Amino acid sequence: MTRLLRDLPLPARRYGIIHHRTAIRHARRSSIIAVSRILLIMGGGIAAYKCLDLIRRLRERNHTVRVVMTKAAAEFITPLSVGALTNERVFTELFDLDDEREIGHIRLSREADVLVVAPATADLLAKMAHGLANDLASTVLLATDKPVLVAPAMNPKMWLHPATQRNMATLVADGVTVIGPGVGEMAERGEAGPGRLVEVPELVAAIEARLEASGSASIPAAGPLAGRHVLVTSGPTHEPIDPVRYIANRSSGKQGHAIAAAAASLGARVTLVSGPVAIPDPPGVFIARVETAADMLAAVTAALPADIAIFAAAVADWRVDDAATQKIKKTRGDGAPKLALVENTDILRHVATLKSGRPSLVIGFAAETHDIVAHAKAKLASKGADWIVANDVSHDSGIGGEGARGVPGSGAGRGVMGGDRNAVHLVSGTGIESWPEGSKAEIAQRLMVAAAAALDTRAGGR
Ligand code: CTP
Image (tube, rainbow, N blue to C red; front, top):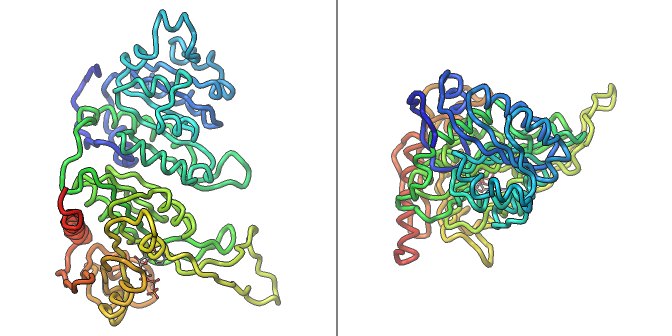
């Protein structure tokens, strides 16, 4: 049992990605925290070295830490150094008879308040998702009924691979909490993207947040979307010109993120495929972070099947053909470089026209500056969507609250794009509904309530 030295209010989370900033704020606020028994399961990866600092920080905060290392983890750091920091025996082998007599895998799990998998390698995550138990780490993870938090760390291509994304969606659905991965440079030269183990303070904060939330960990989802999988795309995409320059657009991701949050609040399991945004993660959703339209298509494909798919992302229509691998230099007299553009796959159309595995309800957005409803109707037909949410993104729409009526060309953060308010028309095969202006959260809630009702009608109820 967790022994609470002082009650600390913390936002309870059933599962999903922990909102890093909230977790860190909590960690900073709390000088005295719950003293807990943490079972750290270390996978084999270059990031394993960060676990030494993690153990030290957890011990400083009075937690006890017991460690299970995979064989691969022991290739990166020695059980000896881990044991010196935990002041406990380090467990490495499943078929160690001594271990089984003294302390078996069931006891390892029973005597922990939370299981933390860090670094969670692609291999370990795959074993967890498929219920494999062929070494001590995977056996303990299969034999536990305690809260599990995973901190993935791997090469960005491995992280974005459909198999890993599928496994992550399964784990989130199973109630596993995910922290990270962070985005940045990898240990391998020239490799960058999502896949870095989150920094130790974030991990400590996430573990403590998970411990605090664990009282509600087993509450089954309730609400009109309980048992449904909702897939949402959000934000812009960045299409590289060279390693330092890219083509982007003004999308903030606020509407897509609000839709993901609304779907989760109605009980859905939510996968949010997000382009680069500067807004907080919505709680209780699985986030696949992507950069380009091609990455977004891969992450969306990996996340299927879904009951409802909502395409709120402002996907770049074109990418630079053959982006330069080195920075393009400005050589005097050479003039401006010519950029050849090629069209990106239309992700909405791709999913809406799937022959098998098409979500029951496919919803697209139409960002228009003129003839809004006419364009939305045309998109409904040409993309094969069930609904199109059409919004006026012209500067003179008058929507967006403070700073909405910006001067054209004065930068982002004006009007609907970047603003907090929206006014939309819902265009479907049966007609057009014009909704009153509201906050993006209000529009999101109304959309998801309508989607839940439509799904029930289509399925003839459940
Ligand atoms: N969309 C997509 N993949 C793309 C382009 C667009 O999934 N490569 C989706 C958007 O997420 C949105 C809808 O298609 O739901 C409409 O996007 P929009 O940019 O308004 O339309 P386009 O088809 O790009 O047409 P245009 O830019 O000419 O208005």
